[in-house]
Image (cartoon, rainbow, N blue to C red; front, side, top):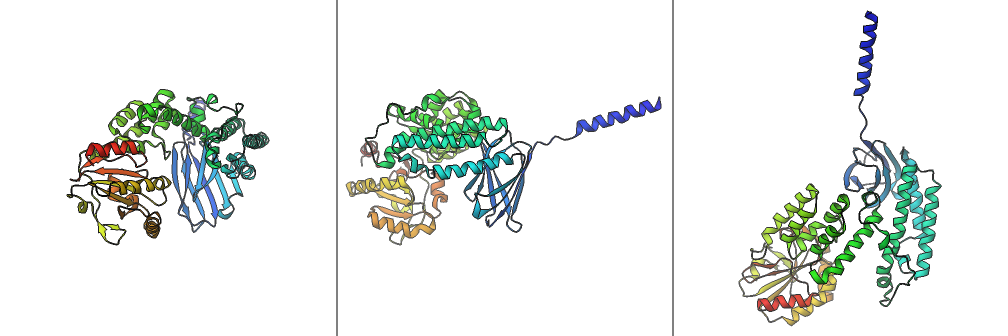
Length: 465
């Protein structure tokens, strides 16, 4: 009897131990990189980003990662992306030479998939190269090129003995990449070739009718799908702009009206894209209060709401009628220094252009701003241009002023976009135009650009300029 009790007790202990055995809910990513001198690498995925310290002495990196879903990631090695497929609890190791990024040894359960990505990138380089090269082709040659490429990588995927679950995702991803090429062609071909009279043939494949706006699985797994969907939202936004006139406000309204899936909708609303970022939107829209309250209504992501709330609260200091933030002792083109206070109290409005020599959109405004400055040279307005170039580009700034024969007061910001003046105005995109009244109060923290001449001239007329 005692033996039976003892055996039962031991059995309970064994079962108890088995129950308490921890389940691995993380993965370890590690690697060895020759000829790499940076301090870190970066792992990026959908809604995920983490820097991983690189040990330059031992030429290695290692980190423990927790992810919500198996999926597509990129290891960014000094701006060079390496495609990876990661699963929740399966480790991945890479070994390579930074000077030979096309040759990587993978270890781990997903090695076959990650080796497939390397082979796929080689096919891309061989058959596509730079995307501009195929977008300038005539329609028949373009369609033939992307068909050949699609067939080649499909054959590679099917013949690479990939896990069935991943292969299903990848076949979809290949289709979305193909559709992305088709989607870009009508927009970029006329621009790249200079052929403004280009018209697609009637049999050119349509992309818009092949895209669902509410597929969260594809949205998470395919960057190509996300790119097309963002393009569709912008297309519909631009179609409504004549009615609304405010891109960013119309953009989030369009998302709200067109997209119901919460994952897709929240990501599109907030977005990390440079030209549709909500942080840029709220600082650029003509009606930040309306933008803010609509964002809170449309989004269900509390983290996103908190960040936009923080941004909105910071914008209150630059509301219409508030005293403008000041800049002090900015270097003038003539070698002197100028502060905002030096320009006030003279009965003149101040129209400020925040720009940089590297900004293409800024360059388009330059001749129009120059013409405007000449037109209003003797009026009650001062034209001020503030460069936010890096300190190393100061000579280029001066050369640009000389070459373009730029007028007005030309200033160089003290800390580029990190200057107090630009930070307080929440300048996230260039160029930015600001109008200040003669007493130093804000008329518009996001004034019309010279290219929006009708709106700008109406403002001048209303102000009595």
